[in-house]
Amino acid sequence: MTTQASVDLIRARQTVAGDAELFAELVQIFTDQVPQISTDLRSAMAARDSATIGLIAHRLKGSLAVVGACCAATAAQVEKSAKTGFSAALLELAYQLDAEVVALIPALQSVVAGGEI
Image 1 (cartoon, one colour):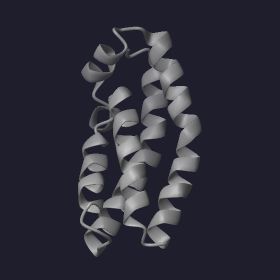
Image 2: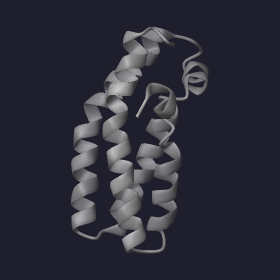
Image 3: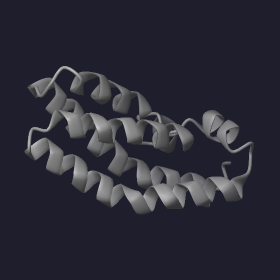
Image 4: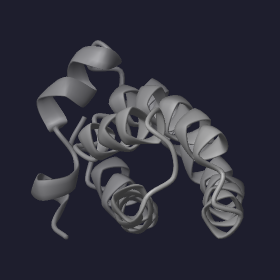
């Protein structure tokens, strides 16, 4: 996944009003939280716990939007799907969200390192 495909630079710049230092701090906070979020999401998927999957997706949706991550839309889909209970479709979306979030980390780090904000 390329940086362009995973991070909306315009949205990210707007969120931090062009403050590269603030963006770098937000990326660091997000990056630090991803391993636990991923673990929690995978545990909820294994337990077939749609309520927890939906809660994690809801929390992720806001964090992803703040850093300009394009996968915030996937988080919204997971959150919506979780409201109808556990299903194969929810599980597939949750796996997709987890993969997108994990893949996002190098893209965000690249944006910070490249001074793109």
